[in-house]
Image (cartoon, rainbow, N blue to C red; front, side):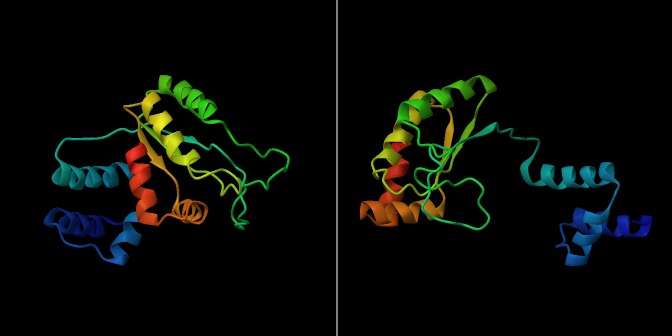
Length: 168
């Protein structure tokens, strides 16, 4: 990127002007990471002050048993298939507690769409995890899982979300 374009982009950024698609492409193509990082730091500090956040996120998959057959998924296993698993809640808590030593701040929970696990398994697992790790944020379940919970519970998505939030 030539010096003239850099100056132009710096002026736009410092003036708080909206960048164009072409500006974004030029920034993406820049190999001057120190300059780009400095510009990004200016924007971040202007918006947030001198505050930063660091998150230690780990994943917990309590079951990979799934009735869906998403073309992109290498995670799911059909019931009874080799390598299919479903954890007892106590096992999930034990694994999550083992991650606590890593300064865990967030636990991301995604599962397969298990055909026989009862709805109650999911809020109970969140309650047990929250009790074991009260300072860890639980980020649980995809929109597809919420829809699956509607099917197996007979509850609405709103009722499901309320119950899951209450659980942890």
